[in-house]
View 1 (tube, rainbow, N blue to C red):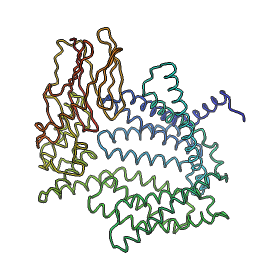
View 2: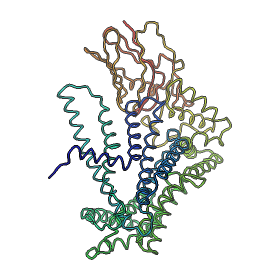
View 3: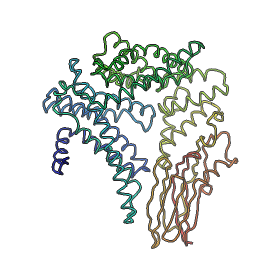
Length: 597
């Protein structure tokens, strides 16, 4: 076996970069932003911009790849190619300014839908004509196999390099930060995996239309893995449908997931076996291909009943909106293929792409429909006589609207201007180094109080493990008269451990801000612990401050928000300005003041 030389690998790399310059550029942008986040995860000011860089880089990769494939097939001029790349940048700019996942949870769903749509565009961008079904199937077969191969190579490369790094760390006593492993993974997935995947895209693409090769492994995978799985799903669902008909009851809402699972496995199986479905010796495959869409019809009735039950009880949310849309799309696809036949498989990604774009924007879009549905539901609850159940439901809706659509979506239910309140709290956020999540929580508490919803309702989650608490100091100033060092601290339980060194009076001290709510301080001789968890538990369990009106948000004195310990002749006192979270997750910020004993 002849292995490629370094020069051959280098030339192949240049060839891929020359063929796909824009997709690789977007991949590098997303990768760099992700790596920066691993080093600046406590920087609340900039992290949201790096997150935007990640998903915009991903979108740019998909869109520019689709454009490159379309250009190769249709022989666009360089002027048009660069013009369309300019339009891609414009689309990314519009997404950047119109969607903010850092503020609204519903925008996260919009980004997932857009990402799904843009990747679907890659699937049919090269072969757009209805006469090019074979080329369409061949290029997507290449994508499927190349994705699996690049994922395997990336995983093996990461494991191998991680072992090498760990070995050098142990053998040569090197001090690598733990983030090196996540950064390595990000680089391999973002850059290596992308370039490897693109290197396997056939060239010239026109030749795919006449290609007839069908991988044996793909047939085995489909025939003995995907189709049996889909058949098992089908048997379970049909048996369940018979059961609810006999009992004459509405189906459980969870059955929708099983139906969608059957649809995904079934459609994927049909796509993968499309070229050989009518070949001699493939009767089992042919039978499955013919019967799949027919057997989807009774399951769609079951799916509609499941969705109706959930929507009737709780209104429309983003997840239920997607279920409704998927049910309608599956009905359309099933009826179309039953009437027209199964030749035009390109309709599957094309129709899904169009549908995905349509539901993102406009008054009919997923965000607006879900918001209006829950606002109407809240209005009906508030108009009725208060009960424990209605308070529970109202509390849940307020949380949903604030988290998914912003506090302004609740303006119609209260008289005070919520925008002014939000502006004021945002200003406090900057001073106290709160996160936007802290501000949103305070805004929700304010609205609940203004709407006179009972904040002390009981639910299945009403325990200290789930309740959220916020403790903040009245006065953020500290006495620096005897201080020899001031060290700002921002520990966040949702991210990685942070380790740094501080030089204090001719000594080097190592600070470890851990995700176990501890701050470990050590020198060459000994170590101490500042236990944030103990303070949090004490504050939560102190019944003297747990009044009904606080709803988990408390204003504390400076002396109640101090953790202190002594190491050698130095005292380390952590003046905590803000302590938020529960017994499982916590965020905190403040200053450690070091004084000499």
